[in-house]
Length: 191
Image (cartoon, rainbow, N blue to C red; front, side):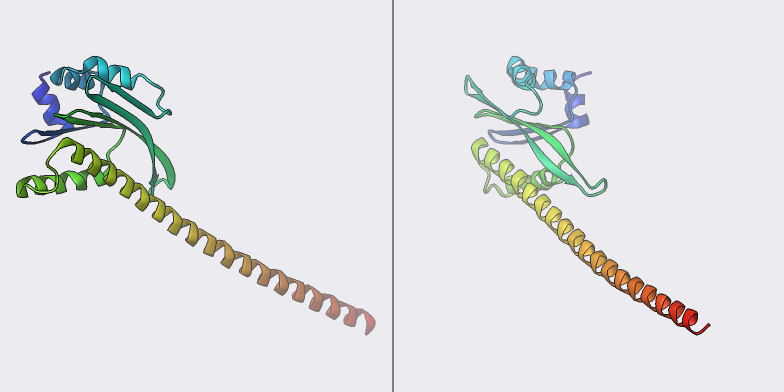
């Protein structure tokens, strides 16, 4: 399989002048090796990705920076928190992002980047691109946390309402039990 087919199949690639951003979503080992060969950084990528997936990592070598971290996301369908592992390889000529699953905010960012490239403003070097990517990810995390807070507030309100309903039912049942006991005593006394 040629590199062009791989890039067109699962790797998003954005170019403008000296800027190159390659975004890999859940890549196979072969796909990572192809991208490593494309930029002559195969060993650097491999050594960075070999670490434990739950540990944050920063590695600097020969004008290359490798950063890896887990970014928790809230999955509204399953209502569970999932970790999305992010790795960044940054140089003066390119940025490579590798992550486990699609990130809607990166899709939005890529569209915004395309518009900025067409208009030739905002992003004009890889350092700014890297900052915008990080900002995009952390804004997304903040939005995820806000959604979680809203969900927790709704659940808390539901718990309060159920507690009030339960207290009312307990009082109602207690009242009915007292009435039944009084009626039973009245019937027994009048027999």
